[in-house]
Image 1 (tube, rainbow, N blue to C red):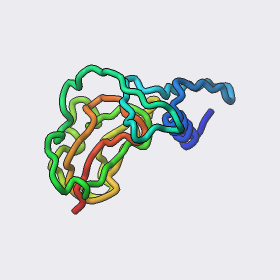
Image 2: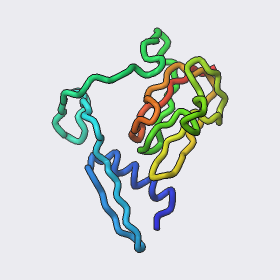
Image 3: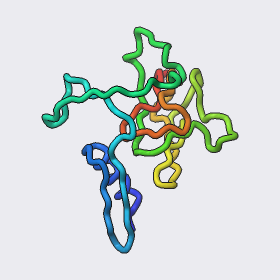
Length: 157
């Protein structure tokens, strides 16, 4: 059917295009990619995409703040953000009974596994691109994430 790289590229394209759903039949297989976000998104008026009119929709209140969310300092601009390379489901641990890979305050080295993003039954380990300290964890465990969405903030060491 499709190679992994081809699937990732298709997911990226659908996620960045704003298309709601794409269905493809190829080599005897069928693939469906849902690209529209499942929650309403506020688009700032300063950056409308491709001439589209910005929209703002009312959404339900967020149930809990992400770990480390209230801790902002003057040197937040020094942070490095680890973003999701694919659309999927964010998991902080390898299984529900295990401890998280990392938590706020943990020191990490380049290449250390930070989380898993599950996409179409494939578990993709997301690794740190830098050494430093975890400052923030943005998504909640088992929360859907979009391509490019922030997962972690790391203060480089």
